Image 1 (cartoon, rainbow, N blue to C red):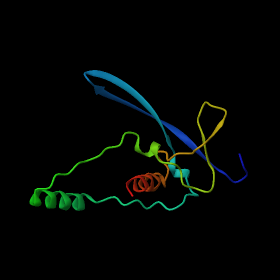
Image 2 (cartoon, rainbow, N blue to C red; image 1 turned 180 degrees about the horizontal axis):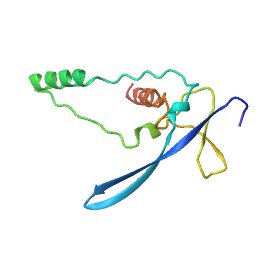
Image 3 (tube, one colour; image 1 turned 120 degrees about the vertical axis):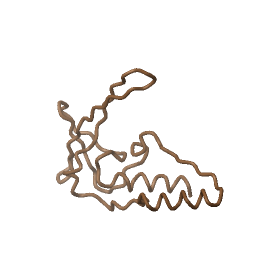
Length: 122
């Protein structure tokens, strides 16, 4: 690891949910964003609840069809857009892992994902 590189702690998030009548246990790693200090721009256009309701009212009034897309593991599909390398330290593991994709918990993950979606649509 280079001198001055960011090293972030990863946190395990455990989840239980019922899927097809069976209890399913899941675990995922998220970055501890409280220590993500040297990040790039974080802006990602997200409509407020009111803006979304206005859009849905317009669609209904005009008889338009609309679709909602929920991409599975969305942030994990976006490349990390930073010039400075960021590493993760996972508790119980002696190594350091370079972060090359947007990761839940990073302050700029939503922006990275939005830019990736915008690139696909344009």
